Image 1 (cartoon, one colour):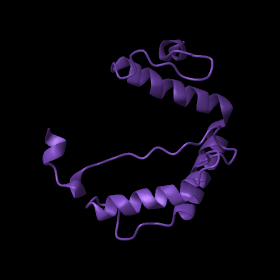
Image 2: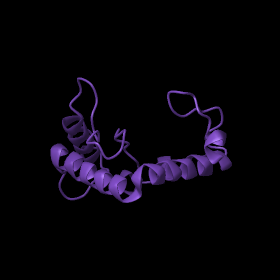
Image 3: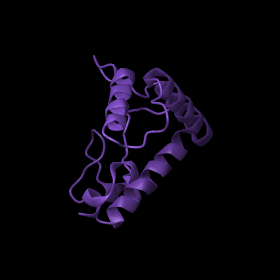
Length: 117
């Protein structure tokens, strides 16, 4: 209810962009979809509806390139074991808060509790 009462410019939203596996240039990729253009259109639509997306809507390609560069740097700095550990901590934290009840992660159906181990 509080969110409905907030002005759109004051609301905080998150946009998830696919990028797996990390560090191999897969950020913002999807089969037969133009993710950069879709992201740009989404941001333009949000701005038109009154959401604060900054003074200018950035170019979708530039956004994906920047995200990809950050992802590559993070993957290089953490390495494979560090990325696994980071993912495990995030999922375990969400599980502890009860936000992943019944959710499985990964193609093998690994549960968040298994990631804690």
